[in-house]
Image 1 (spheres, rainbow, N blue to C red):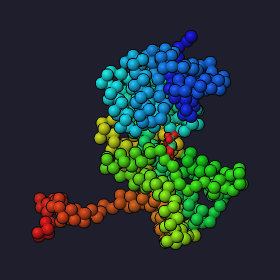
Image 2 (image 1 turned 60 degrees about the vertical axis):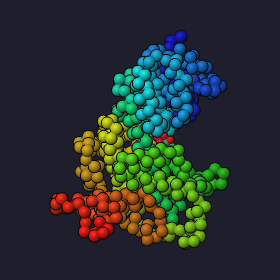
Image 3 (image 1 turned 90 degrees about the horizontal axis):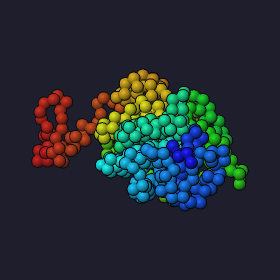
Image 4 (image 1 turned 90 degrees about the vertical axis):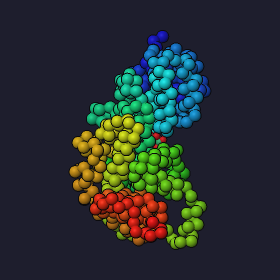
Length: 467
Ligand code: 6PG
């Protein structure tokens, strides 16, 4: 039998969708799943694509079905399962056979696995895949990390299965080691922030303006025809428009207001702190999910302190403007963090390519990313808020963000992400800040010293015995 071009382990939702995508693009693919029945059922349901799919019932059979040098994608739960799968598979492979971890791995794990593989002369890639099930099936955004030569070997297959933006495949090598999974992690941090800011705008419309979900849906749909055009705004319109088949009520009105999370947003916040890279909008979004989960405490808080968010008056155009400004501020933070990580880990992540790879296929795809890619290509190390196109948008819309945050504060609406964005923006446009007071305090109680504005070499204040 003709051997497969590539192999895949793990036929869960994402693995199955990716395998079908690979087969549909004309590549023969061998598949294996821990439970053999899952493999058989998958193959039986593959329809016209079944001819290009080789189901196998053991790891040796999987390996034997693939043409060397082999490439095998792991689509198994992130964490220890990846390590045990690599341990089971490696002894069956030649050193130049390539294992590709396509799960949502923590990049520290990918760095470790890359180093282990490199030490033994084995090929390994860590690959971020975004777009959910639909993306995996019809065109995800792919962020690769590991040895460039290994990426180049599988790029022809990955480029055919990836989403395309104006004909350019959204599959890009981001750098060595854990660079691909790191870029995916920051993608998810931005995903959390985008979602949170949209939820904040929804809350203002629902609780402040008194709009129903059915009235909110066309507002999102309208925004999706302007600068906010994006997958997340598009699906927010669809979510708001949906009704519950069981009760006929608006779907949003039957969904519990406690957000789940699998941890990638949290990883972004943790890594940002390690890197001293300020990403307050993303951090606020992660915290907001944690606050949302504390429903009983929130109910007690409302009983103690008042009736929750109050009606207010705001033009919808201000809400749109606030979201435009908030989104730019959040992405500026995300790209700055990527630059800091790239420098700290010596990856050389190409920031414009990063913006490009997010233009299609992934959850945060949006019209704005095209302009961001252009701005980053012009001047890669300039903060995005200073790029002329985005500076102009911020000039135009930061007033709206300010009015929205101020009205929300006065009427008891929680806007953690939008207000964190505004505070960061105001700090970033203040040449003379207030940390001189912190430096004075640090020197007062701990003799930590400080720099003087006049450059004189006096490093301590006149605090007497306290100094
Ligand atoms: C993607 C998503 C995906 C992520 C989900 C759920 O890019 O396709 O980021 O990888 O797993 O969005 O994430 P949470 O459960 O943490 O919200």
